[in-house]
Length: 349
Image (cartoon, rainbow, N blue to C red; front, top):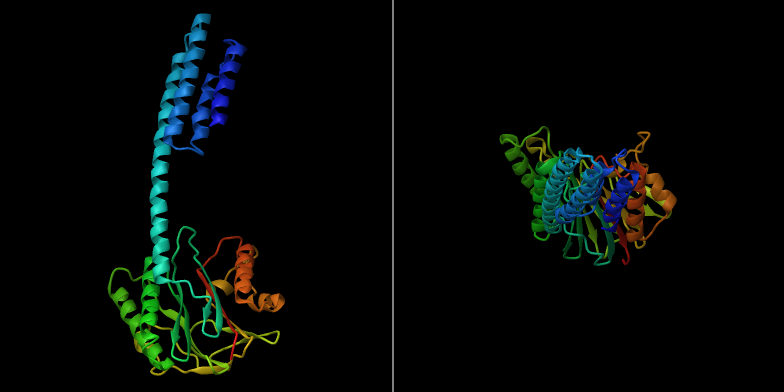
């Protein structure tokens, strides 16, 4: 607050010292305007009153000198100061509302998209969730983990679409996964259940006013047994997981590609389960297409596999942190799509 007060004093002294030929009083409006950039309406009003008082002093001296036109300057200062106070109060109210919305969004994210535990059985896990909308906390990407008898089950997915429709669908799919992951032991049965849940939700959207085009959910669901050095994968149109082992990056592509979830009559009758080796010390990297479709200033896609090969990271936490920093720098802190990432390392088995 010393800055605008000092500014008022300097302008007043300079105006009086310069004589009636030079009028610096109108510059006093700078003080409340400057205060509005860092303070609330009460402080702005206080500085405005001080500035008006300084203008009155200047005007009184000018009248003594025989100058009478300061009334217009005084009126302008009062009018603009009142406007600044009004808009400062409106901005403060908007900031309070935005803080409440952010708090609710963060609570909803923790409830719907719970952070993955760092240790699950013989696995060490790290995760990352970023939204393309800077003010949003929840997007259309999803991930989850569930501890089942003799192993761990993971899901990562991406809802095609934007806005609240995508958030609703993501919440429904992750909720269905959390509810059924423990009850439906075969991976095929779980995918059938998830497909049915997504189809019901998206059919309701098609029949309602929220439908905005072709919507579906890509997803990859993984079973990682505790005692077997392998991973079972069912991929429904999602980018394939990457296996980091022996200094190499291997793509775990589906041998029998299947359509995404939620396509109704186009759904497959039986999901194909692929099995890949996943030994002690190996690291699985799961991601959504927001990672590989991020572009730099020249329009080039993010080179995920090249980055993973160059880093040679074997710690999930450090890998995810490094990816986060590198991806934001590559895209210039402006993501075109939501991003979800899971890194899983087998510690035992």
